[in-house]
Length: 57
Image (cartoon, rainbow, N blue to C red; front, side, top):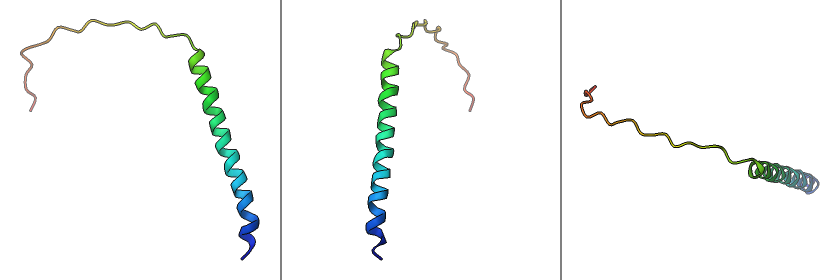
């Protein structure tokens, strides 16, 4: 039953590599997002309110 002593470090190192890979990918994507130009946003006017809307119940 001492196999776990051999397996645990292998699993731990693989888990640590996977986490570091995800962190690296997240940082890379954040940098890409922050380096993008700001989108050209437009504020659209609100349509006039309709007072006599029929009840659909």
